[in-house]
Amino acid sequence: MSDEMSTIRGVTRRDFVRYCGGIAALIGVKGVTDVDVARALDTLLGVRPSVVWTSFQACTGCAISLLQSRRPSVSDLILRQISLDYQENVMAAAGDAAEHLYEELLEGEFYWVAEGSVATDPPEAMLIVGRPSTELAREAYDRAAATIAIGSCATYGNVQASNPNPTGAMGIADFLRSDGVADPVVINLSRCPGNGEDLVATLSYVLVTGELPELDAIGRPVFLYGQTIHDNCFRRGHFDAGRFAEDFGDEGWEKDWCLYKVGCKGPFTFAPCGNTMWNGGVSWCVRNGTCIGCAEPAFWDQQTPFYEQSPGVTVPGIGGVSAETIGIGLGALTAVGLGAHAVAQVATGRLGKGGPAEDAGKTGGDR
Ligand code: SF4
Ligand code: SF4
Image 1: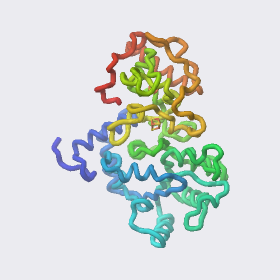
Image 2: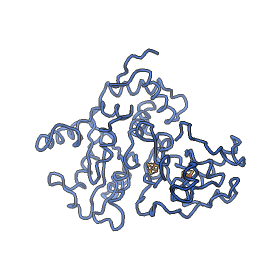
Image 3: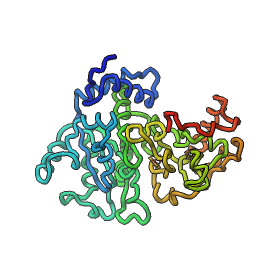
Image 4: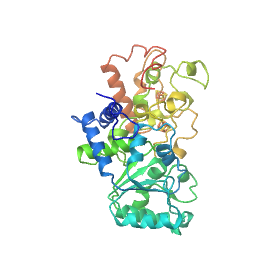
């Protein structure tokens, strides 16, 4: 393939197709190939559907992460090229002009990307142009062709919803339920900040299959959030072999051993970070520290203290995984996740052989 440019500014056709291969693998639907994804994204960029991106209670990290990164990934570049008709952080319009634009856009067909939590108690805790976020969220949801909540604030409330939750902060879907919508259709893409790969993969899924992806019990696409951080962690072999860092900076830390004993929440956290990573695939949390479980509901209340070992998982002894490793988790899904990984380990002959070599993962692409 030549180095001709793709429809994505600054990305060659070769790199674009390679990227689409990664998205096709992430989607994991039988028969969906890199070519299908490339065609779908080309179509998307040709149609340029109207996207209204609003921010409620948030640090704006999702928008900054996706739209203003210095070294944007292909996902970030795709998102920049989608017709983001309303995005307060990057659009030129402000004041009255922005207000009128917003009103106009809500009269037409648009897709709503919601960032930030809704303030419900009291609703006046967050006013935009004199209107509470509750009213704005309900209006946008009722009129949008589809709603995607991006980031941990819009999905489950995040730190604003942590005890004592002084603004009654809620994620979009929870707010809609509390406002009388029996079964709101909101695709939740959690993680803090939201990840562009999730957004592009979800859009690609809809375009190539013509269907919404299957969602888990808390609204996240199963193809993205169906496995734990623990399932796809480059340190996992060390967990199974009973090799743990006991403190930050100790010998185990230096050798990239498992971080469960210094607080890693990977066994309880369902997210694709080990596959998609961050910053265009450069690195991710567990490469440099622990997973703090930011993709899960109420993570601030439930996953703190971040840097202490969580109860709920019996750690294996030195020399290999023990029977007790599997089956004690914070919930059934965790047990299933651990069990599934163990089955895969047995199938590939890795279990019971002392785990990987000390330098496992140091040069691999999975870290
Ligand atoms: S506990 Fe954390 S560091 Fe250890 S294998 Fe699981 S995800 Fe990786
Ligand atoms: S690795 Fe854990 S803390 Fe880091 S982004 Fe993923 S879910 Fe959040």
